[in-house]
Image (cartoon, rainbow, N blue to C red; front, side, top):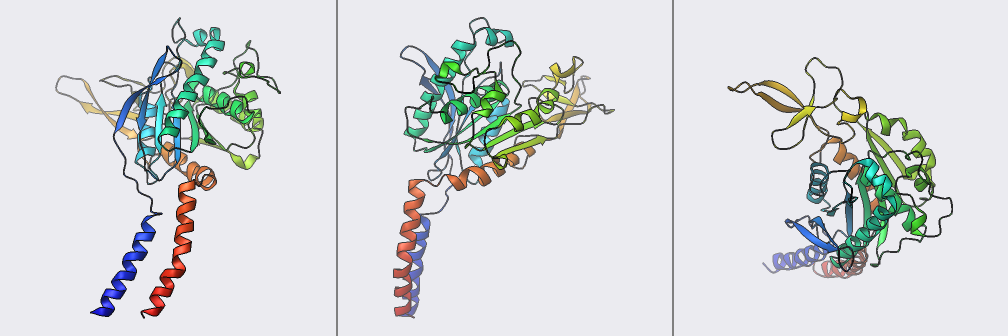
Length: 358
C-alpha cells in the first residue's frame, strides 16, 4: 500500500507539472465588440477568444462590400478558433468611402481609406494585446488583402508602429490582386505611411522581407491566378518564406452547373455570364448543385464541392499548415518559455524522488 501511494504521489506531481505546458483549446463564445478608431469615430469587430496559452492572434479584413461578420471571415475565423491551437481571431469592419462601396469610390478616396486602415489596425492590435496576444498575423480577402499587405510592408519598414508592443508574425492574403493602373505607386524607399498606396500589392510586397506570407487564390480566379508569378517575384524576402497555393474551385462547364450560396435563400451561378465579374472562385465559395425540386417546384440545392467551412476543407487546412510551419515555431511566448524552463528544472527533482522510492 505504501509503495502504491509513493508511485501515485510521483505521478500526481509529474502530471501537475505537465499540465503547465498543456495546450488547452477551450474556446469562449464569439462577441461583437466596438473599438475606437479615433476620439470621435468607432467601428465594430467580430472577436473570438481562443485558448489562453496561444499567444498568436489573427486579424481579418474582408472583401469589398462584405461584412465583418460575412461568410468568409466567419467561417475561416471560426475554424481557426476551433482548431487544436485555438487561435484568437478578430474580424474588422472595413473602412467605406462616403460615396459607396464601388471600387472606383475606393480609388478616389485612397488616401483617407489608407489612414482609416492603419487607425483601425492599431486599435485592433491594442485590443488583442490587452487580451494577452503577443504575436499578430494579418489576413485579408481581396480588398482586405490589399489593406493587410500594405500594413505588413509599413510595419516592416518601421513606419507603422502599433501602440501595443506585439510581434508581426505573418501575412495571409486570399484573392490578392495587382496594382490598379493610373494610381501612384508605393516608392522603393517610403518615408511615411502616406507614401504607401493601399492598392499597389506588388510594390508593397517588395518591402516585405522577413514576414512569412501565404498567398492563396482560387484556380479559376483569373485575375489573381494570372498575376501569381508576379507577386511571388515581387516578394522581398527568401523564396522559402513566400508560400503560394491555388485552391481548387468547382469545375466549369459541367452539365449540372454549380451555384454559390449567398445567404438567405439566394443561390447564384458560380460562374456567371459576365466573365470574371461573377466568378465566385475569387471569393473561394463552396459549390452547390441542384439535386431535385420541392413540391412547389423550387430547386433543392446541396453542397457538392467544399472549398472552406471546416478544418478539413482545402482553404482552412492550407492556412493551418502555414501557421503550424511558418508562424508558430517562430512565436514562442514568454509564458511557454517559462513553462518549459519550469518543466526542465523540475524533472531532475522528480527523477531523484523516484529513484529514492523505487
